[in-house]
Image (cartoon, rainbow, N blue to C red):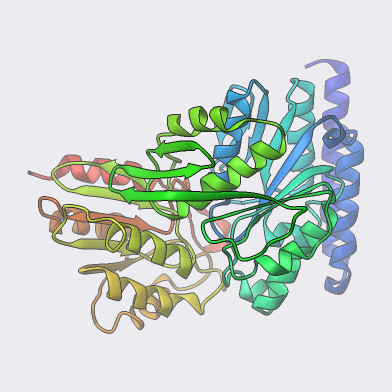
Length: 439
C-alpha cells in the first residue's frame, strides 16, 4: 500500500472512531445532528462524488431492488457505464459483489465511498435504493439526485416511524429534496401525495391512470397478458415479452421504462434490455422446476406476500394441485403487527402452511412463530429450525405442486441474538435438501 493511500486509510479510521464515540455521548434527542454531521463529513471526505454522476434514487415499500436492476439493465443497453446499489448487490460497471450488510440503504460514508468509486471508474449513472430509515438518518443528504422513482406504498416500519402517515411523510422528504425528475406510480393510492411535490419534470406510469395534467409525461401499459411463462404488455406501439412473473413486475418494468425515457433512452432499447432479464436474485426466483416447482422470494410485507400468493394461484393458472408455503417474520422488535397478518394470508392462499424461524435478532424465535401462527387459524405447522421446515415442505410436495419460501430471498445470513449472523441462503438450502430427496 502506498504512503498516501495508507495515510488516507488512517484518517478514515480515526474519523470512524471519533464519530462512533460522538454517537455514544450524544443524547438521543440530538441523534439527528450526529447523522447529519456524519453525512456531511462523508461527502467532504470523498469530495462530493455525486456531482460527477447522474444519481437515480428508487424508493417505495416493495419493488425497489427489482427496479434498480431493471433501470441498470436499460441504461447499460443504451451504452452507459452504470453503478447500482441495492439490498441485493453492489455493482460498478462490470464488477459486482453481494450486499452482505443486511441494509437496504447503507450508511452515509459507505454510500459516498461507493459513489466516489463509481465516478472514478467513469460511470455516468448510479442507481440506488432509498429507504425510509435511511432518510431519517440523512443518508440521502449531500447526494445530488437526478431523479426520484416511487414504486408503491403500504404499511411498513411502523415501530420506527410511529405511524403510517409518518412513514409516508418520510418518503416525501426525499421527493421534496429531489427537484429535477420525479417518476410516480399513478395507480398507487398514495400517488397524489407524491405528485404534489414540485419538480422540473414528472413522468407518471401505470395501467389505470387516475390523474391528468398536460405538463406530465405518461407511460401506460395496455394489452396485458400474464401466465406462468412471464408477462406481456404494450407501451405505445412497442410490445414487451418479459420472463418475469407477476403483475407487480409490470409496474416495476414501467418504472424502469419511465426513468429511461426521461433520460432520452428509446422504447426499443428498453425492450431489448428488459427481454434479456431472466429474473432478479431472490425475487420470485424459481429454484426447482421439476417434478414440482420451488420459488424463493424476499416478501417481507403483507402486500408483497399477498401479491406473491396471488401470482401463484389467482393470476397464474399454474399446473398445480397445491400451494405449499414456508414463511416466518423478522424479529428485533420490528413491525410485530405484521406477524398474525402473515399467518392469515398464508392460511387463505396456501394448502399447506409451515411457519419457521427467520431473523429473530434478540427476540425469542418460538414466540415470533407463535404470533404468526395465531393468524393462521390452526392451519399451520410450526417448525423452529428453518432447514427442517424447508425439508418438510419439499418432502410434502407432490408432482406439479408449488412450494414458495418467503422472507429472506437471497439474504446471506440469519440474524440472531447478540448481533451474530449465521451464514444462510434459502436457495442453496433448497437445492441441498432437494438433492437429498429420494424421488
